Amino acid sequence: MHSSSADEISPRESWLQERLSTALAKYDEKTPLIYRKSIDLPAEVGEWIAGWTGTGLFLTGPIGVGKTHTAWQTGRRWLEAAYAPHHPWQGSPIVKAYRSTSLFDALRPDGPDEERRTLVRDLQRADLVLIDDLAAARASEWTQERLFEIFDERYINRRPVIITCDVLPNQLSEVTGPRVASRLAEMCRGSVVLLSGTDRRKGAAA
Image (cartoon, rainbow, N blue to C red):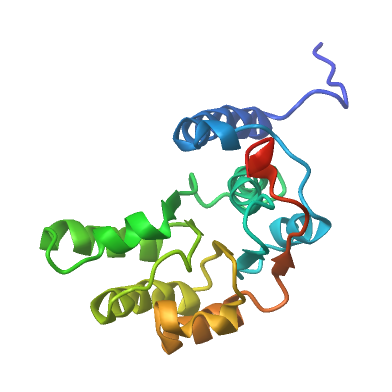
């Protein structure tokens, strides 16, 4: 007669672990090499991951304090949490990550229309979107409209975002336009994390 142990995992847990392993491998593959190293995350970030409220996380602070590294590792921990046995299974989460400069270029009106529409739709629907260095470049009026389409859809459907930036959400109007800045300020309310310290690029990844 088969006897079970408290240490044995259920078939569902085994199934989730297999899918988590595959998801993490794909995530690590698209993570830049210098940001693959596991790091300790601020307590506020851990609370955000555990909250599951559909809010945004806004990582801010001076240049070189580790915002980008923190963002990539936060995305990885968020993905791990999505496969926890106690969490309602809603399919394999889709995570999209962009540097703002690359995103703004892809949204320009002189690019292929169908590719741009697909990108907007993908960023509206992804389970988690990470945008790095949001204030690195100023978006054109056209790009601001596309950003509004993306963030408004995520805002009304409570889909989370992770943003890194060297200014606060309420200071983004000149970059993203006031409507996007307003939505980000509300989406990230209570989850604005200020990182401090010296410029890590002088000795390590930042």
